[in-house]
Amino acid sequence: MAERFLIHLDGEQAAWLDDGGALVRAPLAEAADAAGERESVVLIPTEHVLLTRVHLPPIRQARRRLQAASFALEDQLAARVDTLHFALAARPETSGDTAALVIDQTRMQDIIDLCRDARLDVVQIVPDALALPMPATDEWQIAVIDDRVITRTGAHRGFAAERGLWPALADGDSAPARIVAYGARAANDTVKAMLAEPAFEPEPELDVITLENDDTVLARLLAQADLSAAINMRQGLFARASAMQTWWQPFKITAGLAAAWLVLAIGARGIESWQLNQRIDALHAESVAAFRDAFPNVQTINDLRVQAEQNIRTLRGAGGSGGMFPLLQATAEVTGQAGDVTVQSMQYREGALYLSMRGDNVQSLEALRAGFARQPGASLDVQSADAAADGVQIRASVSSGAGA
Image (cartoon, rainbow, N blue to C red; front, side, top):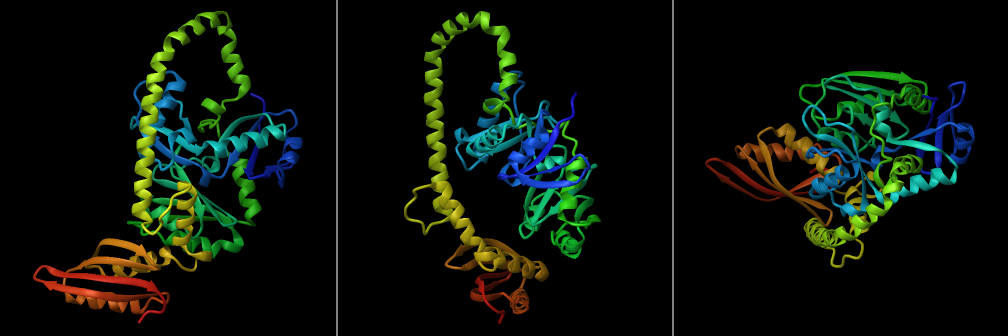
């Protein structure tokens, strides 16, 4: 197989290795000039892609496998499945599930259009987490580049996030026994501190490999990438045109029979389309209900996705200095130290986190107050504390400000 040209694409800015192995960052058109006649493989930010798994029946036809995957995953996705693009691994994993990638169709089309306009012959598109070295069993591979943390947790599993969000996402996954991280020398201490934040039990072994700078980290990612077994996102609607034409060529003789079959199938397909539209409408109604539960103060919904993103950004707080997440972090630290306090429910509204908690005894309340007194950015306001023989029920709010 001829050598393929590997490009990391972040919007219209591209990065690749020149013939001497040095990293080049430039517009995509210059990457196309460097690629010449070679076929190209494009890495895109993993933040734009959901890496998940789906259980599928034994279906051989690729188109039907993708269709089955979209229906199987629709209850797990906030967006309508007809606005998403799905790509599947060729074979199921040992568990019986099949690895799947999900991306917004418009974003995928934008990537295809950018590459076409630059005259790149792109044969494979892959999330950049899957370009990291294959992790050993119970191991994570991580690359910290600029403010991004790219994480590969398995053959077809991984995620990426800003440094500030990475510990929260990592806490949601199974704890690895070992973490291998690549980072720039200037950020070495920051990377070590970040890796120590998740509450992994037991604490994993850390192997931090320090490189010269962020460009060196990205260059190493590109140089060592082995994408031979990676899931290619150029499937279904976005399959490479030349491959589709090659597939279709032998069937031109039977085109007339296929047209006749299509006429007979229109009725059945019409019924299927009606059923699909009913399911889409039901899913949209559920999404609206979930949105209203999450953001009860929003009276009018014009664009569900845009408004959800705006409200989530509000929850995070401007510049990362306020909002819900710092209050969650402070609450997690204090209740974790208290030990005998359990958070039963929480609600965020009007800039405060309202909590219902259960403690083993009255001393639990004092432990909470002492813990929040040590928090520089959060204060505790206890609304009620009802003691009983089996413990104490506490209702309180946590808001921004110095501990009291």
